[in-house]
Length: 60
Image (cartoon, rainbow, N blue to C red; front, side):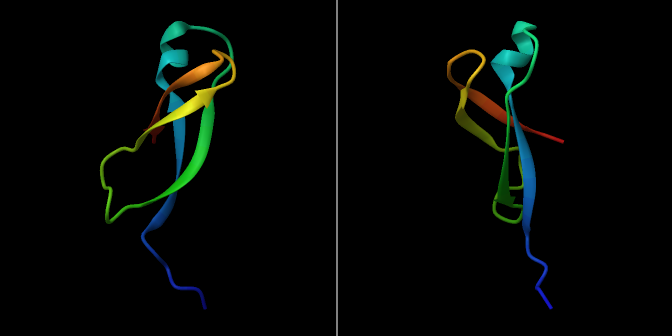
């Protein structure tokens, strides 16, 4: 049987797109280790709607 680990799936959502009020959204799904990074994750990812790299933060 598979061992249960500390790895969980998280959704990253663009902060600039959310604030701009444009229709649609930019979201990415990734995994993180809850034990090593208990706080919310933040990554720079490409937003295809805004056509630039923006900050994406973890949502709950």
